[in-house]
Length: 404
Image (cartoon, rainbow, N blue to C red; front, side, top):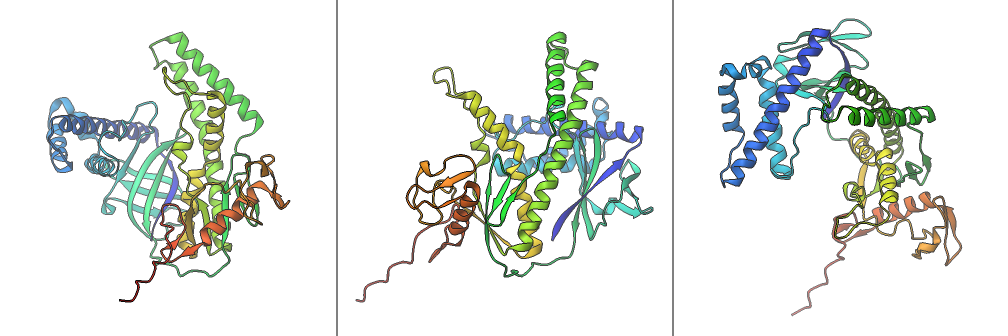
């Protein structure tokens, strides 16, 4: 199987500056190629990777675009390949531009022949990258396979390298352990039939510090007006990035640990097929039809995104590959309002965020645990066309054709 290994890089000042230049070149190639695709689309003409790669090669010979020649050629070509894949998957008009301030620099070396890794000692390793030379990184875990490619990216002011590795593991057989259902919430991160899994990702002091930094960022924008590249603003943005990166790391660590615990103990995990992007859309509306309870909806959106529902599902699916666990997505409708004991559906049964008391039979349980049990029941529901998973058909066995 293909898996990832991420390590902290120890760039020198010169290497860090060069990495910024390579990231800027890849961002410029992405934005220019995307705008070119859109312009060709407006004219009813198609342009693809082959032609754009040829044009980039010609531009590198132009003295006015010498900065393109400074970047490794494979990273620019891979940027064009990534753009083509994104346009085919989402459409040219839905692919976004890469911003200098909002998009962290990132570039990939696709050819494993240009990547050489060796271990220096117990804590440090060394990787040789084209035009970078030897770069040290923290050896926190073995590679565990053959390198396919490497991606260099910046996160929270630090540079990381991620190796895509073929670990040689084939498809794992089902483990035969009991199934469970999982409910994702905004107060309790993960609830299953076995209990509740949650942790705090930000301390009270960090909440106050985040508020102060955001106020300083807003004031620096108001003072300098259009001059958004002021030194004071860049300093505040760097502090915000480091603090947010620390919070993201805690969230990712919780998601990884909770997902591994679930797949180790269960052979099937049923989760809700939530459309998180639609759920976290703004309720602002338009001038003609302004939205209602916009502030409350914004608070709910922040709470959902703070729990990292999408990242948890991604890590759950990744861990399931190595433990023989099947992940089933079910329709989330009425899972929080249905009594697991008598199947009665009523909004009044959920008295609060944590208490569920059925108005029909009196069954009482934790609201999230009750929802997790309903999700498991939906995941186990089997018909002649398969399971009742999200997006699957619920049609029953076809009726027998009457005898002629």
